[in-house]
Length: 73
Image 1 (cartoon, rainbow, N blue to C red):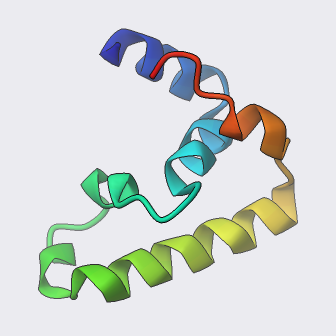
Image 2 (image 1 turned 90 degrees about the vertical axis):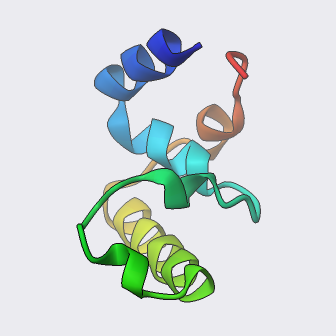
């Protein structure tokens, strides 16, 4: 399961990360982005991460149907 996710992340990183942001799951908080990120409230961090992913997806573009398709889970 981990190998499949890692391979998909190497093939299309934005799509794999966008899949983590789908819905109201807190899976995206498991990403270690900064050593001091634990000092920010989880709800605040989740809101900022969702906003950042939305901005990047708006600039770059991603196929939402492919991001929502999680056959490996």
